Length: 447
Ligand SMILES: Cc1ncc(COP(=O)(O)O)c(C=O)c1O
Image 1 (cartoon, helix red, strand yellow):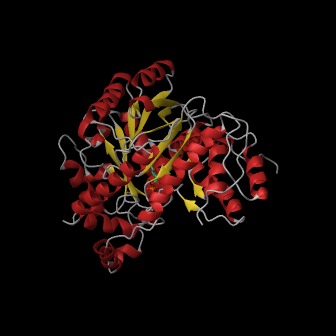
Image 2: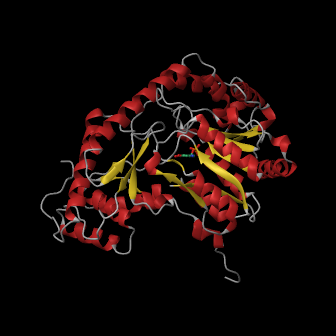
């Protein structure tokens, strides 16, 4: 080629949640049945979308507009309905012009960071959700900047660390928060959100809030939407229907732009994000027409409450089983449908192994582990030994070793098996690291 075709940004693109799939496919070829615990897709894990929601989609198909392009920002009727939903909450204030539709939150993420000046940085949480951290990193071809989430404090943001970084890096123009959080399952109480707002005010920053799980907060857990507390700082809130309807295949999400008029530069930036979207014409039309009908249906509140209760019970079930394992740290999720297990210091010694009966597969795993992060090595061993596919925490831009699993399994017996097998595998793995012996006897795989 006359010129290098590869962008320097490409080195910063990674998505551990799907990266693990190619190795899992290799393991599958050795006859191991894979239990996919890596991706947050409730439909793939057996959840059936409620009949009344499916019926709305049938009705939408009869609307001619659902077959055509729509305005770049999205249908006015959908944006009016969403603005009304936002404004129904205390403190919040947006107009339909502040709502812009995208092909899912992931598309909004690509545009929001992709059209930010390469000199302006957005600091995000660690553990990070790769779609944000990779996109932010790629926009400036530099490693993502992060603030710590503290596992000793229920994965709440470490505001001392965040403040120190805001003081040290003048290029930081924005702060990302994900509430409820992926991968930790933490939910931020209103005071925590107010602290983000206060920092944005003090340092003249904008906020990015990924609230894709905001309708999945477990009973008794308190939080608010950012729009209720960010009454005077510019912010971009990201929302969607992938998780809560759940309808990830709709590729439908939107942003709420808060307090745009407070800052001309922020407003010009939002104009550029919309101009970028215009080049793509528009986002998926049909799901936009379904959103106001679903959100406006009197059955929706019950639907959300029932799901939140279901995931809360599963989080408690996972916690009760995993907390028994010495050498790990685990917190029950407060929202969304993920939980994170951390290995305590000193447990990963390089000699940890799980039993893998097939010698060829055992060798494949040994090769795969060479040079891999210690938690990735556990994930490879777990896959080969049990077939359970989780995501190593090192894939979430954090030095803390661990892994993320989901609470999505709908089959009660299988879910119990997943959690118990994880506990058994963790115990064996940690125990084996205390000696140099390599247990090779029986596999933990489901038979
Ligand atoms: C925090 C977070 N944001 C965004 C997304 C992607 O959302 P969408 O399906 O709307 O693109 C996910 C998917 O797992 C997520 O966990």
